[in-house]
Length: 458
Image (cartoon, rainbow, N blue to C red; front, side, top):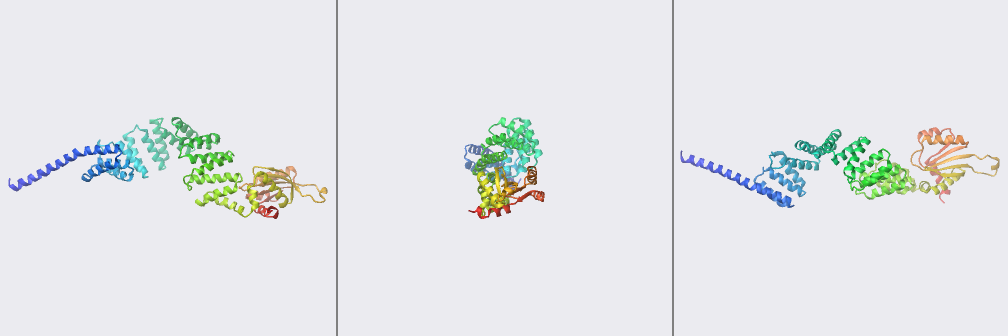
Protein backbone atom coordinates (compact mmCIF):
# COMPACT_ATOMS: atom_id res chain seq x y z
CA UNK A 1 0.00 0.00 0.00
CA UNK A 2 1.54 3.27 -1.06
CA UNK A 3 1.73 6.40 1.05
CA UNK A 4 -1.06 8.27 -0.86
CA UNK A 5 -3.51 5.44 -0.29
CA UNK A 6 -2.72 5.39 3.43
CA UNK A 7 -3.31 9.15 3.63
CA UNK A 8 -6.69 8.91 1.84
CA UNK A 9 -7.87 6.04 4.05
CA UNK A 10 -6.74 7.88 7.17
CA UNK A 11 -8.63 11.06 6.10
CA UNK A 12 -11.83 9.11 5.49
CA UNK A 13 -11.50 7.38 8.85
CA UNK A 14 -10.93 10.71 10.64
CA UNK A 15 -13.97 12.28 8.90
CA UNK A 16 -16.13 9.30 9.83
CA UNK A 17 -14.98 9.40 13.47
CA UNK A 18 -15.59 13.16 13.54
CA UNK A 19 -19.17 12.79 12.26
CA UNK A 20 -19.79 10.09 14.86
CA UNK A 21 -18.47 12.41 17.56
CA UNK A 22 -20.67 15.29 16.33
CA UNK A 23 -23.75 13.05 16.40
CA UNK A 24 -22.88 11.84 19.89
CA UNK A 25 -22.33 15.41 21.01
CA UNK A 26 -25.71 16.48 19.57
CA UNK A 27 -27.48 13.55 21.16
CA UNK A 28 -25.84 14.21 24.48
CA UNK A 29 -26.65 17.93 24.60
CA UNK A 30 -30.08 18.24 22.89
CA UNK A 31 -32.10 16.21 25.41
CA UNK A 32 -30.85 18.33 28.30
CA UNK A 33 -31.56 21.48 26.33
CA UNK A 34 -35.05 20.23 25.48
CA UNK A 35 -35.62 19.65 29.18
CA UNK A 36 -34.53 23.27 29.74
CA UNK A 37 -37.00 24.48 27.11
CA UNK A 38 -39.80 22.53 28.80
CA UNK A 39 -38.86 23.91 32.22
CA UNK A 40 -38.78 27.50 30.97
CA UNK A 41 -42.21 27.05 29.38
CA UNK A 42 -43.56 25.59 32.61
CA UNK A 43 -42.12 28.52 34.59
CA UNK A 44 -43.60 31.05 32.17
CA UNK A 45 -40.19 32.11 30.85
CA UNK A 46 -41.22 31.83 27.24
CA UNK A 47 -38.54 34.03 25.66
CA UNK A 48 -35.74 32.03 27.29
CA UNK A 49 -37.35 28.85 25.98
CA UNK A 50 -37.53 30.35 22.48
CA UNK A 51 -33.92 31.45 22.62
CA UNK A 52 -32.64 27.95 23.46
CA UNK A 53 -34.86 26.33 20.81
CA UNK A 54 -33.68 28.73 18.12
CA UNK A 55 -30.06 28.07 19.11
CA UNK A 56 -30.51 24.33 18.63
CA UNK A 57 -32.34 24.77 15.32
CA UNK A 58 -29.61 27.04 13.97
CA UNK A 59 -27.33 23.98 14.09
CA UNK A 60 -29.91 21.30 13.42
CA UNK A 61 -32.85 22.67 11.42
CA UNK A 62 -34.39 19.21 11.04
CA UNK A 63 -34.81 18.62 14.73
CA UNK A 64 -38.62 18.51 14.61
CA UNK A 65 -38.97 17.79 18.30
CA UNK A 66 -37.37 21.18 18.97
CA UNK A 67 -39.62 22.76 16.32
CA UNK A 68 -42.56 21.42 18.35
CA UNK A 69 -41.29 22.88 21.64
CA UNK A 70 -40.49 26.20 19.97
CA UNK A 71 -44.08 26.25 18.69
CA UNK A 72 -45.28 25.44 22.18
CA UNK A 73 -43.26 28.35 23.60
CA UNK A 74 -44.65 30.72 20.96
CA UNK A 75 -48.20 29.56 21.64
CA UNK A 76 -47.83 30.10 25.39
CA UNK A 77 -46.35 33.55 24.68
CA UNK A 78 -49.37 34.54 22.59
CA UNK A 79 -47.42 34.46 19.31
CA UNK A 80 -49.89 32.14 17.66
CA UNK A 81 -48.90 32.89 14.05
CA UNK A 82 -45.30 31.85 14.78
CA UNK A 83 -46.57 28.85 16.71
CA UNK A 84 -48.73 27.85 13.74
CA UNK A 85 -45.72 27.95 11.41
CA UNK A 86 -43.69 25.70 13.71
CA UNK A 87 -46.57 23.24 14.15
CA UNK A 88 -47.10 23.04 10.40
CA UNK A 89 -43.42 22.20 9.98
CA UNK A 90 -43.81 19.40 12.53
CA UNK A 91 -47.03 18.18 10.90
CA UNK A 92 -45.36 17.86 7.49
CA UNK A 93 -42.15 16.17 8.64
CA UNK A 94 -42.50 14.54 12.04
CA UNK A 95 -42.50 10.80 12.49
CA UNK A 96 -44.16 10.22 15.85
CA UNK A 97 -42.03 7.72 17.72
CA UNK A 98 -42.67 8.69 21.31
CA UNK A 99 -40.55 11.85 21.48
CA UNK A 100 -43.75 13.89 21.79
CA UNK A 101 -47.35 12.86 22.33
CA UNK A 102 -49.15 12.64 18.98
CA UNK A 103 -52.52 12.99 20.74
CA UNK A 104 -51.46 16.21 22.43
CA UNK A 105 -49.93 17.55 19.22
CA UNK A 106 -53.07 16.80 17.18
CA UNK A 107 -55.23 18.63 19.74
CA UNK A 108 -53.01 21.70 19.59
CA UNK A 109 -52.78 21.55 15.80
CA UNK A 110 -56.57 21.40 15.55
CA UNK A 111 -56.92 24.41 17.86
CA UNK A 112 -54.57 26.44 15.65
CA UNK A 113 -56.33 25.41 12.45
CA UNK A 114 -59.62 26.52 14.01
CA UNK A 115 -58.14 29.81 15.15
CA UNK A 116 -57.11 30.62 11.59
CA UNK A 117 -60.46 29.49 10.12
CA UNK A 118 -59.10 26.39 8.43
CA UNK A 119 -62.12 24.35 9.44
CA UNK A 120 -61.61 21.41 7.13
CA UNK A 121 -57.99 20.98 8.27
CA UNK A 122 -59.11 21.16 11.91
CA UNK A 123 -61.73 18.53 11.11
CA UNK A 124 -59.05 16.20 9.73
CA UNK A 125 -57.08 16.53 12.96
CA UNK A 126 -60.11 15.73 15.11
CA UNK A 127 -60.94 12.71 12.92
CA UNK A 128 -57.36 11.47 13.47
CA UNK A 129 -57.77 12.08 17.19
CA UNK A 130 -60.96 10.01 17.25
CA UNK A 131 -58.89 7.07 15.98
CA UNK A 132 -55.97 7.70 18.33
CA UNK A 133 -58.26 8.22 21.33
CA UNK A 134 -61.62 6.62 20.45
CA UNK A 135 -63.10 6.70 23.98
CA UNK A 136 -62.77 10.46 24.34
CA UNK A 137 -66.17 12.09 23.78
CA UNK A 138 -64.53 15.52 23.38
CA UNK A 139 -63.07 14.42 20.04
CA UNK A 140 -66.50 13.53 18.64
CA UNK A 141 -67.91 16.78 19.99
CA UNK A 142 -65.23 18.77 18.14
CA UNK A 143 -65.80 16.79 14.95
CA UNK A 144 -69.49 17.62 15.21
CA UNK A 145 -68.83 21.32 15.80
CA UNK A 146 -66.65 21.50 12.70
CA UNK A 147 -69.21 19.65 10.59
CA UNK A 148 -71.81 22.12 11.85
CA UNK A 149 -69.54 25.04 10.83
CA UNK A 150 -69.34 23.80 7.24
CA UNK A 151 -73.08 23.15 7.09
CA UNK A 152 -73.01 19.34 7.33
CA UNK A 153 -75.74 19.31 9.97
CA UNK A 154 -76.78 15.65 9.70
CA UNK A 155 -73.15 14.54 10.18
CA UNK A 156 -72.84 16.97 13.07
CA UNK A 157 -75.92 15.49 14.74
CA UNK A 158 -74.50 11.99 14.33
CA UNK A 159 -71.22 12.88 16.03
CA UNK A 160 -72.99 14.72 18.87
CA UNK A 161 -74.97 11.54 19.43
CA UNK A 162 -71.74 9.51 19.37
CA UNK A 163 -70.18 11.80 21.99
CA UNK A 164 -73.24 11.39 24.22
CA UNK A 165 -73.20 7.60 23.69
CA UNK A 166 -69.64 7.50 25.07
CA UNK A 167 -70.44 9.97 27.85
CA UNK A 168 -74.15 10.53 28.51
CA UNK A 169 -73.21 13.47 30.75
CA UNK A 170 -71.23 15.37 28.11
CA UNK A 171 -72.89 18.75 28.60
CA UNK A 172 -71.45 20.62 25.58
CA UNK A 173 -72.74 17.90 23.22
CA UNK A 174 -76.18 17.96 24.83
CA UNK A 175 -76.30 21.75 24.51
CA UNK A 176 -75.16 21.77 20.87
CA UNK A 177 -77.51 18.92 19.99
CA UNK A 178 -80.39 20.81 21.57
CA UNK A 179 -79.55 23.86 19.46
CA UNK A 180 -79.59 21.80 16.27
CA UNK A 181 -82.92 20.22 17.17
CA UNK A 182 -84.32 23.70 17.82
CA UNK A 183 -83.09 24.92 14.40
CA UNK A 184 -84.83 21.93 12.82
CA UNK A 185 -88.04 22.92 14.68
CA UNK A 186 -88.01 19.66 16.62
CA UNK A 187 -89.07 21.61 19.69
CA UNK A 188 -90.16 18.75 21.94
CA UNK A 189 -86.88 16.84 21.46
CA UNK A 190 -84.84 20.03 21.74
CA UNK A 191 -86.53 20.91 25.04
CA UNK A 192 -85.81 17.45 26.47
CA UNK A 193 -82.12 17.57 25.51
CA UNK A 194 -81.55 21.16 26.72
CA UNK A 195 -83.29 20.47 30.03
CA UNK A 196 -80.97 17.47 30.49
CA UNK A 197 -78.00 19.76 29.85
CA UNK A 198 -79.33 22.33 32.34
CA UNK A 199 -79.68 19.58 34.94
CA UNK A 200 -76.01 18.67 34.45
CA UNK A 201 -74.80 22.27 34.57
CA UNK A 202 -77.35 24.81 35.84
CA UNK A 203 -74.79 27.60 35.46
CA UNK A 204 -74.45 27.23 31.70
CA UNK A 205 -76.76 30.17 31.03
CA UNK A 206 -76.60 29.73 27.26
CA UNK A 207 -78.94 26.76 27.72
CA UNK A 208 -81.61 28.96 29.26
CA UNK A 209 -81.50 31.21 26.20
CA UNK A 210 -82.32 28.34 23.85
CA UNK A 211 -84.87 26.95 26.28
CA UNK A 212 -86.51 30.38 26.20
CA UNK A 213 -86.49 30.35 22.38
CA UNK A 214 -88.22 26.95 22.40
CA UNK A 215 -90.81 28.08 24.95
CA UNK A 216 -91.44 31.25 22.94
CA UNK A 217 -91.92 29.26 19.73
CA UNK A 218 -94.56 27.13 21.49
CA UNK A 219 -96.32 30.29 22.79
CA UNK A 220 -95.45 29.62 26.44
CA UNK A 221 -94.54 33.26 26.96
CA UNK A 222 -94.46 33.46 30.80
CA UNK A 223 -92.04 30.51 31.00
CA UNK A 224 -89.96 31.95 28.14
CA UNK A 225 -89.63 35.29 29.95
CA UNK A 226 -88.31 33.48 33.05
CA UNK A 227 -85.81 31.49 30.98
CA UNK A 228 -84.50 34.65 29.29
CA UNK A 229 -84.14 36.28 32.70
CA UNK A 230 -81.69 33.53 33.66
CA UNK A 231 -79.82 33.61 30.36
CA UNK A 232 -79.06 37.32 30.93
CA UNK A 233 -76.42 36.18 33.41
CA UNK A 234 -74.24 35.13 30.49
CA UNK A 235 -72.29 38.19 29.21
CA UNK A 236 -72.45 36.73 25.69
CA UNK A 237 -76.23 36.35 25.82
CA UNK A 238 -77.25 39.36 27.90
CA UNK A 239 -78.32 41.63 25.04
CA UNK A 240 -79.97 38.80 23.10
CA UNK A 241 -81.88 37.78 26.22
CA UNK A 242 -83.11 41.31 26.87
CA UNK A 243 -84.31 41.54 23.27
CA UNK A 244 -86.12 38.21 23.54
CA UNK A 245 -87.75 39.21 26.84
CA UNK A 246 -88.89 42.44 25.23
CA UNK A 247 -90.25 40.52 22.26
CA UNK A 248 -92.19 38.11 24.52
CA UNK A 249 -93.67 40.99 26.49
CA UNK A 250 -94.69 42.68 23.21
CA UNK A 251 -96.46 39.50 22.12
CA UNK A 252 -98.21 39.40 25.49
CA UNK A 253 -99.42 42.98 25.02
CA UNK A 254 -97.27 44.32 27.86
CA UNK A 255 -95.65 47.11 25.87
CA UNK A 256 -94.53 49.26 28.81
CA UNK A 257 -92.58 46.36 30.31
CA UNK A 258 -91.27 45.51 26.83
CA UNK A 259 -89.99 49.08 26.47
CA UNK A 260 -88.01 48.72 29.73
CA UNK A 261 -86.32 45.53 28.49
CA UNK A 262 -85.57 46.87 25.02
CA UNK A 263 -84.16 50.14 26.35
CA UNK A 264 -81.79 48.06 28.50
CA UNK A 265 -80.89 45.98 25.43
CA UNK A 266 -79.93 49.14 23.53
CA UNK A 267 -77.94 50.48 26.48
CA UNK A 268 -76.05 47.19 26.84
CA UNK A 269 -74.90 47.33 23.21
CA UNK A 270 -71.17 47.22 22.54
CA UNK A 271 -71.64 47.80 18.81
CA UNK A 272 -74.32 50.14 17.44
CA UNK A 273 -74.11 48.50 14.02
CA UNK A 274 -74.58 44.92 15.25
CA UNK A 275 -77.62 42.94 14.09
CA UNK A 276 -78.79 42.62 17.69
CA UNK A 277 -78.68 46.36 18.38
CA UNK A 278 -80.50 47.22 15.15
CA UNK A 279 -83.21 44.70 15.96
CA UNK A 280 -83.49 45.99 19.54
CA UNK A 281 -83.99 49.55 18.24
CA UNK A 282 -86.52 48.34 15.67
CA UNK A 283 -88.60 46.53 18.30
CA UNK A 284 -88.27 49.48 20.68
CA UNK A 285 -89.60 51.81 17.97
CA UNK A 286 -92.56 49.46 17.46
CA UNK A 287 -93.35 49.62 21.18
CA UNK A 288 -93.06 53.40 21.25
CA UNK A 289 -95.35 53.59 18.22
CA UNK A 290 -97.88 51.30 19.89
CA UNK A 291 -97.90 53.54 22.96
CA UNK A 292 -98.26 56.70 20.85
CA UNK A 293 -94.72 57.87 21.65
CA UNK A 294 -94.19 58.61 17.98
CA UNK A 295 -91.31 61.06 18.33
CA UNK A 296 -89.33 58.49 20.29
CA UNK A 297 -90.17 55.87 17.68
CA UNK A 298 -88.95 58.17 14.90
CA UNK A 299 -85.69 58.70 16.78
CA UNK A 300 -85.08 54.93 16.86
CA UNK A 301 -85.98 54.47 13.18
CA UNK A 302 -83.63 57.29 12.23
CA UNK A 303 -80.79 55.67 14.17
CA UNK A 304 -81.41 52.38 12.40
CA UNK A 305 -81.67 54.12 9.00
CA UNK A 306 -78.32 55.86 9.57
CA UNK A 307 -76.59 52.47 9.84
CA UNK A 308 -78.71 50.44 7.43
CA UNK A 309 -81.01 52.39 5.10
CA UNK A 310 -82.66 49.19 3.87
CA UNK A 311 -83.54 47.71 7.23
CA UNK A 312 -86.98 46.09 7.16
CA UNK A 313 -89.72 48.75 6.70
CA UNK A 314 -87.87 51.62 8.39
CA UNK A 315 -88.02 53.85 5.28
CA UNK A 316 -91.77 53.27 5.05
CA UNK A 317 -92.19 54.16 8.72
CA UNK A 318 -90.20 57.37 8.38
CA UNK A 319 -92.17 58.39 5.30
CA UNK A 320 -95.39 57.58 7.08
CA UNK A 321 -94.62 60.00 9.87
CA UNK A 322 -92.72 62.69 7.98
CA UNK A 323 -95.78 64.96 8.08
CA UNK A 324 -95.50 65.20 11.87
CA UNK A 325 -92.87 67.91 11.38
CA UNK A 326 -95.17 70.11 9.27
CA UNK A 327 -98.69 69.25 10.41
CA UNK A 328 -99.31 69.90 14.09
CA UNK A 329 -102.85 68.61 13.79
CA UNK A 330 -101.72 65.22 12.49
CA UNK A 331 -99.03 65.14 15.15
CA UNK A 332 -101.68 65.65 17.82
CA UNK A 333 -103.87 62.96 16.21
CA UNK A 334 -101.07 60.40 16.34
CA UNK A 335 -99.44 61.22 19.67
CA UNK A 336 -102.10 62.53 22.05
CA UNK A 337 -103.27 60.59 25.10
CA UNK A 338 -106.50 58.60 24.97
CA UNK A 339 -108.47 61.37 26.73
CA UNK A 340 -107.15 64.14 24.50
CA UNK A 341 -107.63 61.99 21.43
CA UNK A 342 -111.36 61.66 22.17
CA UNK A 343 -111.66 65.44 22.40
CA UNK A 344 -109.78 65.83 19.10
CA UNK A 345 -112.12 63.35 17.43
CA UNK A 346 -115.10 65.38 18.62
CA UNK A 347 -113.61 68.46 16.94
CA UNK A 348 -112.97 66.50 13.73
CA UNK A 349 -116.58 65.35 13.79
CA UNK A 350 -117.87 68.89 14.31
CA UNK A 351 -115.63 70.87 11.96
CA UNK A 352 -114.55 68.21 9.50
CA UNK A 353 -117.75 66.30 8.70
CA UNK A 354 -120.36 68.62 10.18
CA UNK A 355 -121.86 66.12 12.64
CA UNK A 356 -122.51 66.32 16.37
CA UNK A 357 -121.02 63.78 18.80
CA UNK A 358 -123.58 61.98 20.96
CA UNK A 359 -121.39 59.30 22.47
CA UNK A 360 -117.65 58.54 22.20
CA UNK A 361 -115.56 55.73 23.68
CA UNK A 362 -111.81 55.00 23.44
CA UNK A 363 -110.83 51.74 21.73
CA UNK A 364 -107.52 49.93 21.31
CA UNK A 365 -107.29 51.25 17.75
CA UNK A 366 -108.52 54.82 18.44
CA UNK A 367 -112.13 55.59 19.32
CA UNK A 368 -115.71 54.78 18.38
CA UNK A 369 -118.38 57.46 18.13
CA UNK A 370 -122.10 57.73 17.61
CA UNK A 371 -122.99 61.09 16.01
CA UNK A 372 -126.00 62.89 14.60
CA UNK A 373 -126.55 65.63 12.09
CA UNK A 374 -126.10 69.09 13.58
CA UNK A 375 -129.36 70.68 14.69
CA UNK A 376 -130.68 73.82 13.00
CA UNK A 377 -133.72 76.03 13.65
CA UNK A 378 -136.26 73.53 12.41
CA UNK A 379 -134.64 70.49 13.96
CA UNK A 380 -137.90 69.45 15.70
CA UNK A 381 -139.44 68.70 12.30
CA UNK A 382 -136.61 66.38 11.27
CA UNK A 383 -135.86 62.95 12.65
CA UNK A 384 -132.28 62.72 13.89
CA UNK A 385 -130.11 60.38 11.82
CA UNK A 386 -127.37 58.46 13.61
CA UNK A 387 -123.91 57.91 12.16
CA UNK A 388 -121.33 55.38 13.34
CA UNK A 389 -117.82 56.89 13.17
CA UNK A 390 -114.65 54.89 13.79
CA UNK A 391 -111.35 56.71 14.22
CA UNK A 392 -108.20 54.67 13.60
CA UNK A 393 -104.64 55.72 14.38
CA UNK A 394 -102.95 52.42 13.66
CA UNK A 395 -100.27 51.98 11.03
CA UNK A 396 -101.51 49.05 9.00
CA UNK A 397 -104.05 49.55 6.20
CA UNK A 398 -107.65 48.94 7.25
CA UNK A 399 -108.79 45.52 6.06
CA UNK A 400 -112.01 44.61 4.25
CA UNK A 401 -113.22 42.69 7.33
CA UNK A 402 -113.39 45.96 9.31
CA UNK A 403 -115.51 47.63 6.63
CA UNK A 404 -117.82 44.60 6.42
CA UNK A 405 -118.40 44.79 10.16
CA UNK A 406 -119.20 48.52 9.98
CA UNK A 407 -121.70 47.95 7.18
CA UNK A 408 -123.37 45.13 9.13
CA UNK A 409 -123.60 47.28 12.27
CA UNK A 410 -125.07 50.21 10.34
CA UNK A 411 -127.68 47.93 8.85
CA UNK A 412 -128.60 46.10 12.05
CA UNK A 413 -128.83 49.30 14.14
CA UNK A 414 -130.65 51.33 11.54
CA UNK A 415 -127.96 54.00 11.30
CA UNK A 416 -127.81 56.43 8.43
CA UNK A 417 -124.21 55.68 7.53
CA UNK A 418 -120.83 54.49 8.78
CA UNK A 419 -117.69 56.60 8.53
CA UNK A 420 -114.18 55.15 8.96
CA UNK A 421 -111.35 57.65 9.45
CA UNK A 422 -107.73 56.50 9.47
CA UNK A 423 -104.24 57.97 9.67
CA UNK A 424 -103.01 55.19 7.37
CA UNK A 425 -104.93 53.78 4.38
CA UNK A 426 -107.37 51.10 3.25
CA UNK A 427 -106.58 47.88 1.45
CA UNK A 428 -107.77 47.64 -2.18
CA UNK A 429 -110.30 44.98 -1.10
CA UNK A 430 -111.68 47.32 1.58
CA UNK A 431 -112.02 50.17 -0.91
CA UNK A 432 -113.79 47.94 -3.43
CA UNK A 433 -116.18 46.56 -0.81
CA UNK A 434 -117.12 50.08 0.37
CA UNK A 435 -118.28 51.10 -3.12
CA UNK A 436 -122.05 51.73 -3.25
CA UNK A 437 -122.46 50.77 0.39
CA UNK A 438 -123.49 52.73 3.46
CA UNK A 439 -119.94 53.52 4.52
CA UNK A 440 -117.59 56.41 3.81
CA UNK A 441 -113.80 55.95 3.90
CA UNK A 442 -111.70 58.90 5.02
CA UNK A 443 -108.06 58.37 4.11
CA UNK A 444 -104.96 59.92 5.62
CA UNK A 445 -104.86 62.68 2.96
CA UNK A 446 -108.44 63.72 3.66
CA UNK A 447 -107.80 63.65 7.41
CA UNK A 448 -104.73 65.86 6.96
CA UNK A 449 -106.84 68.41 5.06
CA UNK A 450 -109.38 68.48 7.88
CA UNK A 451 -106.63 68.96 10.47
CA UNK A 452 -105.25 71.94 8.52
CA UNK A 453 -108.42 73.93 9.13
CA UNK A 454 -108.11 77.03 11.33
CA UNK A 455 -110.08 75.41 14.14
CA UNK A 456 -107.21 72.95 14.68
CA UNK A 457 -104.43 75.51 14.69
CA UNK A 458 -105.68 77.87 17.33
